[in-house]
Length: 162
Image (cartoon, rainbow, N blue to C red; front, side, top):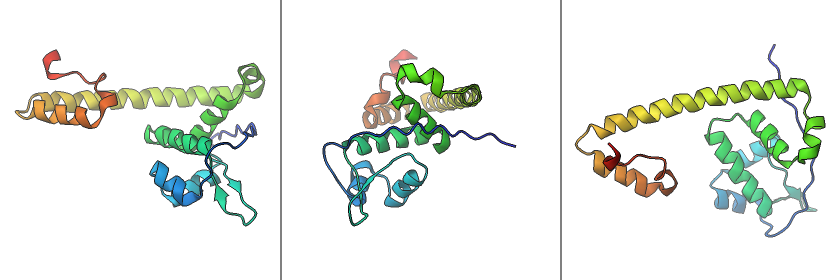
């Protein structure tokens, strides 16, 4: 029997800024409308509805989708993504009361799993980097990769470091 996390704290946030429909949210975030609907089914986003039941999204929804995508791409399952987002919205004073021991234990297990995945990805990254370093094309390939991903530049050792 597997345990499930159900940690909905029911925080409501006032909608502000831009208001767009699902197609525009999809264009702004690069997430398909089908996946946005799935995120809604999972409770990861909560669009407002117009009187004719169209979904509408604001600036906070755009930021939330970007955050969800980042967590999911990092390997965090959607059920844990929801818990993490809900926890971020919980006031620090309310956290102890809102997090029963069973939930804390499940979160600790998830944290262990995340650490294991990070370690595995780090080893794989190092293996790829080491292999590329030994090829005749290493400098051009690694520099090209860094140019495409400036946020990784600080984390990736340069050819001069070896």
